[in-house]
Length: 353
Image 1: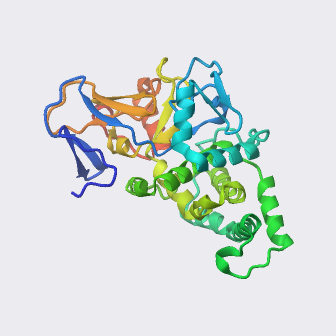
Image 2: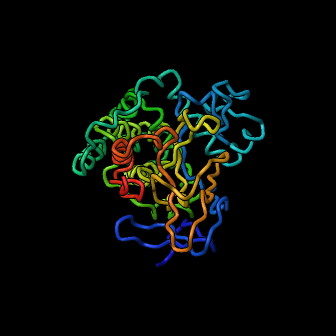
Image 3: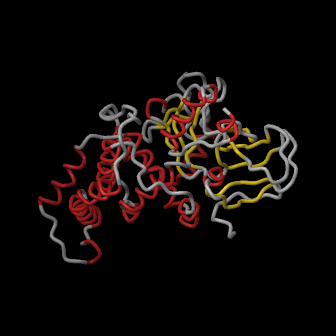
């Protein structure tokens, strides 16, 4: 089997195709308990929920029991635990990142509660046709905004064509800015777009992940993404506009859907949920309700250690459940996994129950 871009590689394990669970990680040798099996530092995109922005470091995700962090950058909307983290964030995001997050913060500030409620995951997910129709429904509006932005900021007609910018184009741009804002959806999209712009050679890491063809939680969630698409066309720096497309935004959602890891507090069994991120290499570990691999986040890095002695040939599994969820009954665990991750658990612990 050809290795996928971004797949983890180690003398301790190999990636193999399985009949029912797609790609999985298998031990190629005996692994003693406590062994560091993998360290995933390949964060592609991340979202810190806006309600936690003052309490969680935008760089290392450090948290001080709900206290406001000492450094708060009002322009970009992030707080930091130290000057070192702030400087590192600036270096990694560059000038384009500073301009982008400044534009986002300018739009969102004061309007962040318009659509800030968590999505009800029990509502039905939109099917493929509804998703296609929703994106097609904003195509004409998006086209007008692109023309307005291109001419307004460069004075050059779009792609050299002779295009007259009319009141209709300017009105389309203003209409987009007045639509309700979904700040966390916007952060998700901006994070992914920036990452693709800054590291184009690593885009294949995302494309190689398992895809969900219906990634939106419900119709409101889908419309939050189509509105965000128009918002970003209206405000992002011009160099990013070629990447602001329905295709890019759908790929980010489709790959993140079943591959993201929660960013939680480290001190109290993860009771505080700050947001989530996508570490492509980490996504190759499948789930078990009785995992043999324990995962722990160390800043922006996930570490995976053997929770017990593991024999050669065993599949290396983590759990997708949080601390409290692990204690639930079999039925509740299976419902949670089906709702959040889209699969029926058939691990040994569930099969033996």
